[in-house]
Structures are given as C-alpha cells and as structure tokens.
Length: 143
Image 1: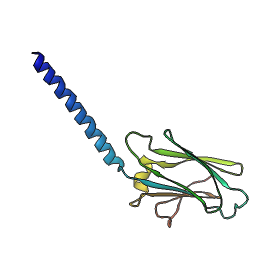
Image 2: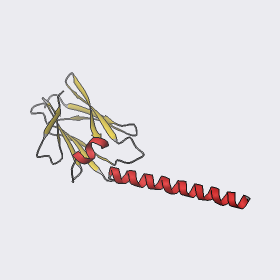
Image 3: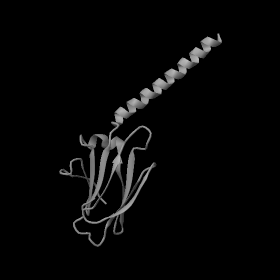
Image 4: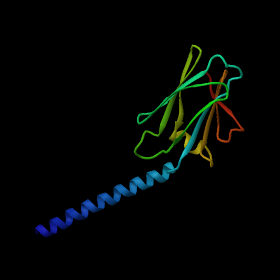
C-alpha cells in the first residue's frame, strides 16, 4: 500500500511540474519572448539652453536619468516575460512642466511596436508622439 501511495505522489508531483512548465512556455509564447527596442527622442525645435530631463524605471530596474539636448535620445531593450512587470515608466521634465508616461507596457505595445519591435517616442513642445518605424508619428498625449 505504501508503494502505491508513493507512486501516486510522485506522479502527482511530476504532472504538476509538467503543467507549470507548459503554462510558463505558453506565457512566453504570448509575450513573444523577444526583445523590444524602446527609444525616447528629444524632438524639441530649440531647447539648446534647457534640456529635456528623463528618468525611467520599473519595479525591477532603475535606468536612471539623462538630460537630453536637442535630438538626443535615451534607449533600452525590453524583454517581456512572465516573471517581470513588463513595463517601464518615464518621468519627463521640461522647464517647470513634468509628465509621467508608460514608455513601454507589454499588453499595449507588443502588437503596436510592429514586426521590427521598435517602440519610439518623440517628445516635442506640443506632446508625445509614438512610432514603430520612425517615419509615421502619431500623437498619443500632450504635456
């Protein structure tokens, strides 16, 4: 009887591990398991004396801050997966104006960033523009 119970417990444990691995594999398939290139570009026309300040972080990592002069950029790679928060928030500051926005959010951007997995933001005086090819820009929101 002890042998049967032992075999039963081993089979239950093994099947639990198999199910957990299948769930993780499916989740990685849903999230693509790929890299997404995220760029934030200073698109201001004339801010040579006043930089655009950016600071980006998530629950897992703090990318730190940068002072972007005209046409400078701040970029990084996102690797969405089951185990991380799958987003990156950035705080932008220009003069006395401040805005927090989601520079990358997996549930929103996996499809939107396109086949090349490029998620670009151009920040200008009148707002924040998104593009997945850096040719066609769409205004997402204002300051």
